[in-house]
Length: 398
Ligand code: ADP
Image 1 (cartoon, rainbow, N blue to C red):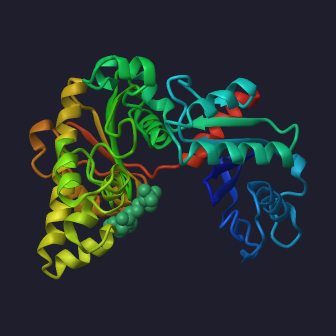
Image 2 (image 1 turned 90 degrees about the horizontal axis):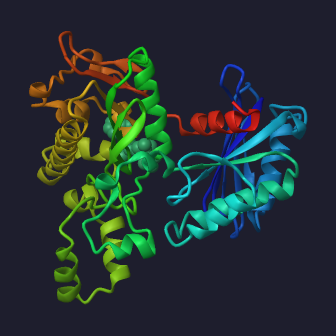
């Protein structure tokens, strides 16, 4: 079965076509500037040429039409006809507490995605537009929604509740949901597999990219995760502050006369390693600046490693011990210096990295030192494949 995986944003749409036989990527691409003018980049993986050009995309529907045209075209295509595409899997940001797992799109599912608009105001409406566009262009092809939040649904109340008046949970569903769930699910499942499926396997996964989050899981089921009601919580990120004292808001807003929207913009877009360093949100830029003696770039890198290390300690306590530590996403998969820096001083938890093996970039590797009690893995994440697997399982009734 061939599955089209869609990640629709408000003005962009990323896609991959995956052949589930051998889990082979057939083509991928990106539609940009939807609703403005429109631009398509289509990359077949079968040796055919890359297509890149401006195409008018008034709505997501025209974008999906263009994607299907390219996927089936003689010059750029990877399938003969649209009928070969057995199902579509959609990334949906927020499933609220309704969805503990992925689901076939029907009226109830669409209503639930809409109900979560207030919790994911930027993403959920766009995700639904992607679903509607596919329904219009590919009628009869089953659609599946895969929620970023469903991984977090196995958390216990003590992990997901905020210590706020209970009515905010009851009336407004305010709780920790966690994000990057599909990535955490993919990596923790792979870690358990690499451990031979041993029951009770305790995993901490560090998804470290532009956005960063950690999760603690047992047998692939989430026990805790660092992002919260929104992706602003947890460790510092490229431009997000991560956890900080909420009373800071009152101080800064009063002193500088900011509205709450301006304040949140600072916390989301101007903080994190960018805010600390004043150099960049990109970890490669920070590495070069720090190497040239920039003290604030050094501070940003040290702060990031320190906060990730503290979460590893906290989650080891939450799990009652640790079997596997995983690194994934842009920084986690590629930065040996950041991995080494995070693991420094964690020997007492049984975490030891082999400096040679730690040189690995972008591929799966056991980087534990001989004698490390905890196994340390680099596992490249693949959210699209996870979405495709869920889609196949739901459509084929696995
Ligand atoms: P996103 O959260 O946008 O999906 P990614 O997971 O792609 O982000 O991660 C992007 C981050 O990964 C950038 O900050 C980039 O600098 C960092 N990165 C990629 N390669 C390296 C590397 N070799 N060393 C350090 N950082 C890297």
